[in-house]
Image 1: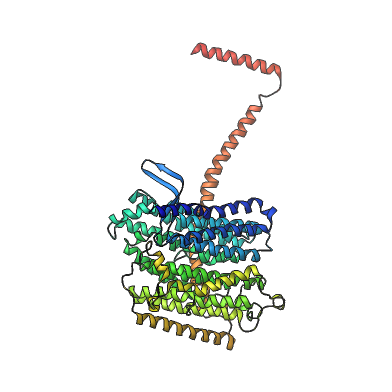
Image 2: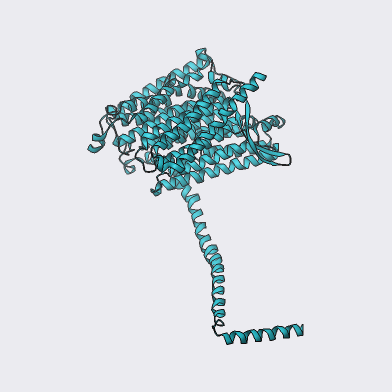
Length: 637
């Protein structure tokens, strides 16, 4: 016992350094960015590397049974209610720390090469550091209020990063859209916290979870609370209906897309529900809603990906779809499986986004896959690493996505055959649009301009080295969660076992796992052949514009017109109300009242100035008259 206490004390300082250094990096690059110039990129990267080393040190000096708090200061206290500003170190938070700082560091290094010629270089890195700081607060807090600070912080930083190139109005609109839609979800989270305080008198995890056992399963208040928390998760992790901000977030520089989509902001909703699994286990109705929304989102977004031609937009809808898989796992109580897919998805989705950035960099800013092709020879490293990412997300054995996605499918199969079938279909569609992107980008003949062809070149080492590292992780990362048919220990499940118990009571048979893995693998290879044959051998290209598409294709290409629906139902009425407010309230009441006061003041001034003649005799006369009037009034009174 004493040895454990001493070990925890030795880990407190590294734990405190983890969020402190990115915050310090933010201040340095913000205040001295112009003087530091490109050195600010390396300083910002160092501010993430050291926290990664600290996280690795904590991981190596703890085990699955570790759980301790790091008090920082007493924050809010009145009566018996108190909320400390403190961190919680346990396997779940350690896993997220490794992912956030590890992937975050690679994205920082990548950004040094990608943003090298941008005039806002140091400002960009200050935003990146601040983003990572808030994400670390989110996953390290020992209570919901500290989590909420990080939650709001990453929302702010996403606004700054998505609208980084603020001279482009469409980018500003995308940033505002992300910010506003996240506020809708955040309101749900905030209301959920109010209910938690009302029920448990605290926002600390340990207090809430210890008292939760006293609440009966399916109680009304716990259902309402978990539904509100899920609304927060829907906004941050882009689930129906609060998903449309995420594809538009592609307006930011590509490293921003990788940071938001891969390992940080969009996984916050998954982390929230996993951390709160004790509460969600008491609300089966909420879990069913999560399952339905997750499965619907996965299929809904994957179909849109079939018709998108912007390489980053395809990956964006892929992210929305993969998040749907994670929520489906959460809905059936497979919390550890959801975290497993969070981990593998961080590897291959960061790889795919950064790979797309390397392509865009080589193409001089071009993002339309119809204008690419044949890049395999000019960009050999980018081609090879992007292929690995494509194989991983498509579930090809033995890449990372193969293990985590099949584990989700197996868990959903135990719960519902229908939802299992929908997710299998979604997995197949994922393979189709991902290999469509790969072949149209890297195979066949080059379809760009002669100037683009002349300038084609592999990206610098600051870009390709992170790609290689992520490709390795996307290849071997799945071995952290080998299924039981391999007669091996599921390392991630064993590590998270004490913090996140599995609620899935039944496991599928080995025969089913063999059939599932074998059939999906066969289907993927058939898809690879079919997509290659259609786009490369037969040289079929995506339609040049939506006018030549059939009605179904046009409907999918326009993303089911969901944005147009939202504009008609929500945006325009709000704008109309604002115009009415402007005319009725602002112009007719506020302006009229203010202008009336101004007119009164002016009129009084004009009247008063008539007695300011400058004649001394008149002033003496006025004083005498005034004294006579005052004396007369005093006599009368």
